[in-house]
Image (cartoon, rainbow, N blue to C red; front, side, top):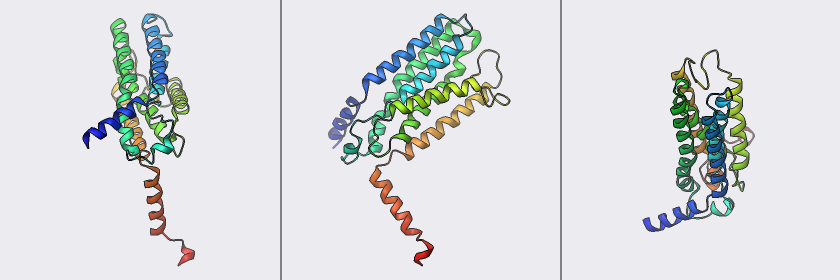
Length: 222
């Protein structure tokens, strides 16, 4: 039994969209390298934040399945396939962490490691967006989820809508690094909830909807 699960798990991992994952990870790493090389310039933080957002966009690809409609009818449930795919987020996570460590090494006064929670939130938004968009036969939400993740992170960092209370990206002498970590922790929790809610098999969701409908009949049928 366990051997069969491992075989199915290895197939799920092999069927991952490795080309987009590796390509997007390379782009993210390149941006973070450029930021580290240009750490003395004023655009280093912008390039680095774009690199972290790109890591989140990369994570949006880990749930892509070309034949989702067929896979949803196999013995391996969608939730188990999601569990097998989630470790792939370690790839963009490693890129983000190594990039931040490199930046902190060459530019310690900016306190780059304060952006670790932001990086985690970026990855969580990517996975959560992909899970939410992965409905029915739409088994390849990576492109759209990646664009949405990248755009939302760039918007949040650029506009900084909560700047009167907390800084989204607390670099340098910015105050409120603890509050920023709490904000991103909340983002991670909400994204995880979205991922779990959208990881059930379509048949199970339809069955639950029918049960809810039967438990609450229309008033006209009384």
